Image (cartoon, rainbow, N blue to C red; front, side):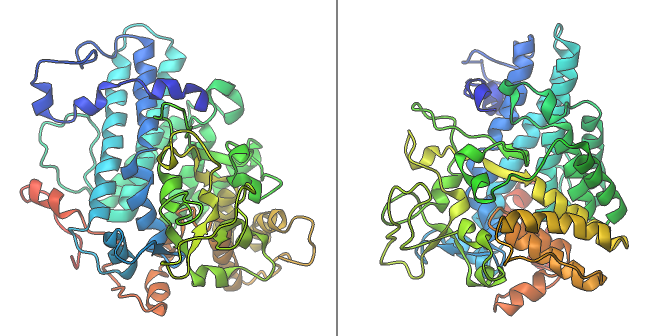
Length: 487
């Protein structure tokens, strides 16, 4: 997908049409709603603009990391105690409805929904274009809209379900989460009938969502909802399709050479151009703070995460970068900042030296890996009374992790459902550590309160499983938006 980044850099008009006030002005730029969506290129660029949103600060950077990793038992805020204190409130469960983090992701994800809605509404009106391309672009937009809503509903529960770019009434109430999930699945089911398989895309389109992306997301959604038969069916459809496989080396996955590898189901694409515009700050906010100065030092791997790895598990070294170690590219030793206690960093977010400074990070963001899908299959099969099949997929993940060292990570052999469930959950934690999955796993399995309270966090059961609806949104809605319990 890096090969079509130049299209993402087009000064697209989407950011200029987000409110009726702007629409009422005399257009000052090249593109308006009146002169856009006239050509095939316009249709392609509109969908590329949805992908572009995935790299934005409000979608997959600071608050996103806070509301997935830092809020969980996998990491702590990092940096100085007073730096970005709103994330310390998230870590400690002392946040209110006025905290910056929920407001940030709410705005970023609904911007993504808007872009998807605009493409879905207007691409059918493009007068002349290849019909297969038209249908594919609509399927891509639906898949990305489904992804945006999946995170929103997991964070906030009931959310406004907006399916048109310019609704007549902006005071939109929350829809029941079951209705939201139904729409998400409808979008993905429709997309899966149209999207190409990964192998059917040309190299210039590497990184676009595929049929495998849509079906894998359905598997994860059904697992989240406790529909284990459906989750297993979707996961096995992708596994048996043969489009994806485990990369031989776990460590290599998180290098730039490992981007879009054999196990990549969905990655946010990034590139560090000399002129900027193609990168992301995902790498910078988690980079080494001190010497060398590669970033801000947030998302510090926790002691609890370190204890979760089995003895000798090489994934621990591949995940955690300690002061005193050599950087993954061999360029320097990590000295860190003497004024920060207990510094350590997310090694999976490391990128080599690149143009445009730390804020122009070229590292792709791994959203969905094949190992995740194998563990979804394992969990779902175990819950439906098929432990032997579950062990097959669980042990594939462990075998890749241990590599040629037969003395570590032995195959799991238990067929007791409870014991196997615990083993699968542990495997998910260490395999996917610091990849922004842990919080959602704790909540969907009902373990959030136990895990957080064991660490002394001020977690309130029945409240903190969800984040608050941003207070600013509640105020602007003039009563249309209700607040989550306890806030």
